[in-house]
Amino acid sequence: MRDYSYTKNVRKTFGFSRKKNYERIKYENCRCYLCVWIDCSWSECDFYRVGFFWNCVFKNCSFSDQYTYLGANFKRCRFIDCDFEDVSFKRAVLSDCVITGTLTNIVFYGKQAPSGWQTRFNRVDLSGAKLIDTDFRLGLKMEEIIT
Image (cartoon, rainbow, N blue to C red; front, side, top):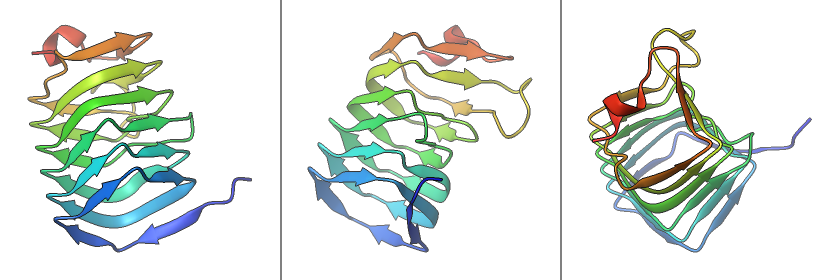
């Protein structure tokens, strides 16, 4: 069994973090508004119950490990030159977001998948992302997402 630390009920507005490494953290019921992370990394972190990121910027950040779950609501967020490898976007909702960087070994599931697996995209720009071994399945088509 993995040991995790828990971050609960955080409300962060206008936050700034640089060169921080986050490992084995479970975020629960957190809200981040207008926050910026630069050169940060997340490994084995669970955003499943994180809540909401609104108008946040992630620049030169990395998200890695099969136990990293990005199942949060991201609205108007920008992931600039970020690397995503072996992470899960199950239950994530991305609206009006931009993602550039590299996505490696990622599977996104559409509305034909069980509800706990689905990733919802609403006006997400992946045109600047490099996709390596990344797949769109069960009712989700890459050409419908990449603008």
